[in-house]
Image (tube, rainbow, N blue to C red):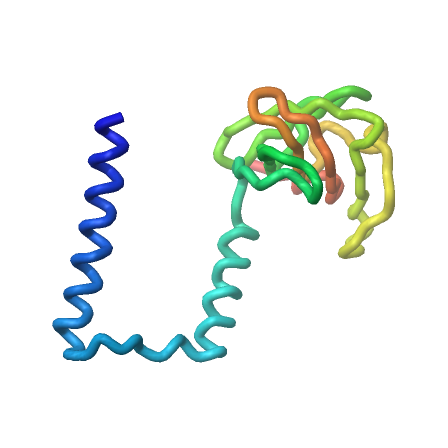
Length: 158
């Protein structure tokens, strides 16, 4: 309890201090103009690039419309190391591995032909060694909601 109070107090003090310092430096309490549209677009483009480079992650959203609570999402991009009709295991480039349950409501897309959207597929068309992106829900044992299969990974020779 005290830890939370100290953190909130320190954060509030930092915010108030930063605001006071900004007024002292500018000599005005009026807000500065908002960033230009081109600056905001550049920032959003950079954020999209960074998210596109993500290997795996977990995030929480509010439950859908009309529902209460929160939903934990888990995602990974990597190579299939195991696949069955009821599960898929993927290893990311940094070595992190995650297993997902596959159900009848899991949506599979096949993109091995290079098409951006891909075609509908089935888990039986996903193979060990394929490059995939998996999005699921749940924290300790996630269930795959979407699997995008980009086909076999690149083979390397020594």
